[in-house]
Amino acid sequence: METEQRDRIWGCAVGAAIGDALGMPLEFGPRRPTDRLVREMTPGRLPAGSFTDDTEMALALAESLLAHCPLDPADLAQRFVAWLQGHPPDVGLHTRDVLARIAAGEPWDQAVGAVQRQKPDSAGNGSVMRCWPVALAHWDDLEGLLMDSRLQSRVTHPHVECVAGSAWVNAVIYHLLRGDAPAGAVARAWDDAAVPVPLRAAIEAAPTRSRDELVNSGWVRHTLESAAWGLLATDSFEEAVVQVVNLGNDADTAGAVVGALAGAAYGLAGIPARWREALRGEWPLHSGHIWRAGDLATLADQLVGG
Image (tube, rainbow, N blue to C red; front, side, top):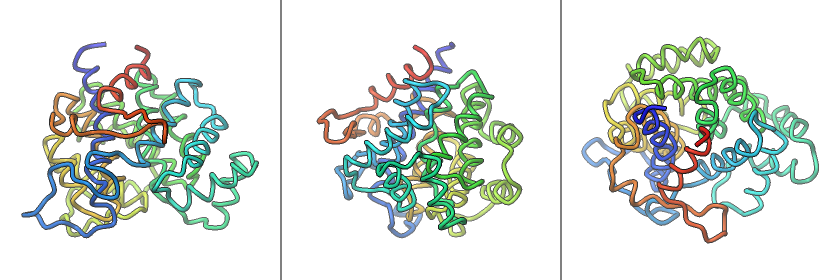
């Protein structure tokens, strides 16, 4: 593996957590005016620089992939349940409903099916926010990447746009890790991921929209619109992430997605050192072990096989 590709792999893992942490204090807040954009790690419901459930669930997925690759959905479901039982401060309602049923003894596929039937249109961003470890575990296997990207989504988010969105994000990362420019990686990922026409149309239109037109809600389509806009309308990791998290609303999740994409595009070297130094997060929850940027880079190495 070339040094530049290794740097992009590190950038993907660290970048996702950076975007999460930068967006954390802006979550559920209003869109920031362009002359008052937040560019530094600031405290919110957690200390400044802290990553949230977006990265915590990604770490659970990474641990499952290190134990079972291809992915074992039953193992992943139990790791998510263990995370939930650690009482994280922020859990999506759909995710909580699915994991509560699994914790009560239902097989994962029955649990997620029951919840989705209750709300068949539920299409939250809970699986795209965490999907990046699959792209690293399958960095040289596009077919395996697509299969496990979809499978990890189905454990909690089986809606067709959630499943396809996870595959698309990781397909973009796959091509970025090979040195494709962002626009080229996005273009190549459409056919790879078999994205449904309505979702593809929304994402393709995003870079032409003004920031005021981007809703940045918890709907998977809005998250992918924001992430595509940030990746394609800017030319650096810093600007991609800053622009997206300052859209407010579900800022940490959109930040995590664009952070993974922009990290794969610009590499660890392209992530500001001040952000890397501020990054922190406790994992496993309540273990006392604080993860830093270096720990995420080490994890990335483990996922790609050393």
